Length: 158
Image 1: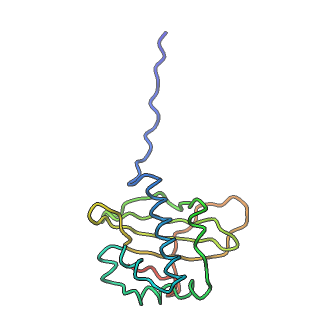
Image 2: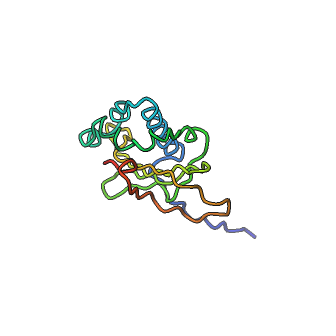
Image 3: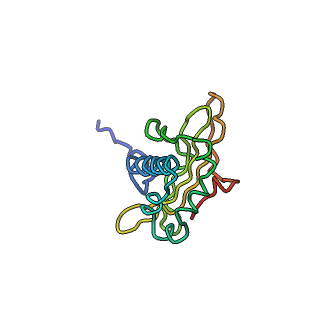
């Protein structure tokens, strides 16, 4: 008697591989970390999409991330810990890639909401929002709400 195999349900396809998403998150946060440590936001700006560059000077970025810099908040954990997505990586109606979630650091988490635009075949930063709320207790956690910054230092910069 032949057995009939039932096909597995189709997995939703991601707009980028998980490895690429992790690379984009880590490289962006580490570039921001270097900018905060040096006070020089030129490289962060220069690596971003042309629309981001047109809307933000290096000085603007310095002001947007002043709070992180003043607190000497180190984003190095982005290189060490796996980011947790609050929602699956997805393309918006304009074809922009959105990566949102957190890095489970303590006592404060690193929440990120990053948008990337494809430019000459490469994903380049289009918008960034970073927040550092207190980490939740060690109990299992439901989905994290996407970052909605309230202060200029955590402002999403298009």
